[in-house]
Figure 1 (cartoon, one colour):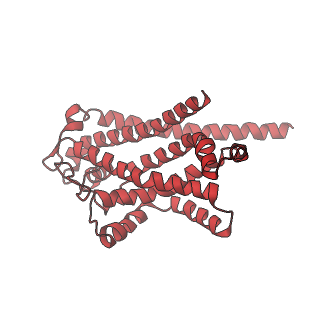
Figure 2 (cartoon, helix red, strand yellow):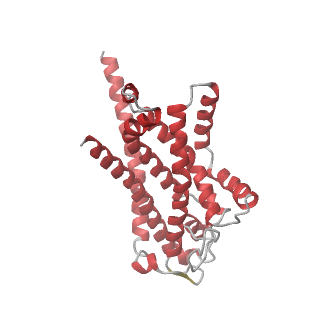
Figure 3 (cartoon, helix red, strand yellow):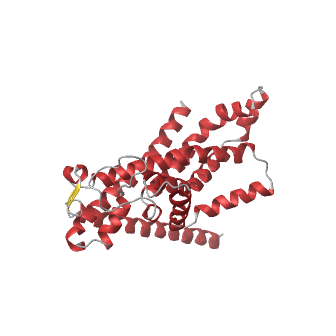
Length: 284
């Protein structure tokens, strides 16, 4: 008994140590970004157009482009991902083909983002002839987010007890009626949480949009879905590694990093708030 208690104590200490290391690393990153970037962040920095090769002005086109490409990603990933999860969990039989599909989806979740970027070039830019534009980048990010959405949605559906379905069917409801009234209301908080977390990851990706539509310097907003656009991740990448005056624009790069961190944090926090609110409303 004492040996088991000692193992348990050691195990908890190791877990707490891992958590402490992660928290310290995150705090260091946040502190470095805030102290070096807060001086560059101002109302003009957030709302002005870039000037003189991005050595002056603001990042408003990059913020707008990031928002637009995230919206396109959501439009593609959310309906398809949730619909696929509902089919796999509620309708599809447990066969070898279904298990192979699930395994493929899990594997696609771990594919490097650069691979999705190259695939997006072949499919959307060249084959479908969208060109390097906002639509190509959004569709590429949508494909990258799709496995995350499917996995998160299916896990949320699995957590709903089978009794909810059986009770509705016993009262004469159809399969879809039981899913719509007794399953989805309880699964939606988890489905939305996973989806928003996937969108937050997509909003911070550079590789998928590197080849499909992002531009470094555009002192104007995209005119249509078939226009190139600026985005915060790609903008930060160029400012930090490829700019002709890296030392001069380094404060602006830190400011851009801080804005991107706040954006991703806001999306992650909104997932928590939405999940809490929906669960609270359902309990009432």
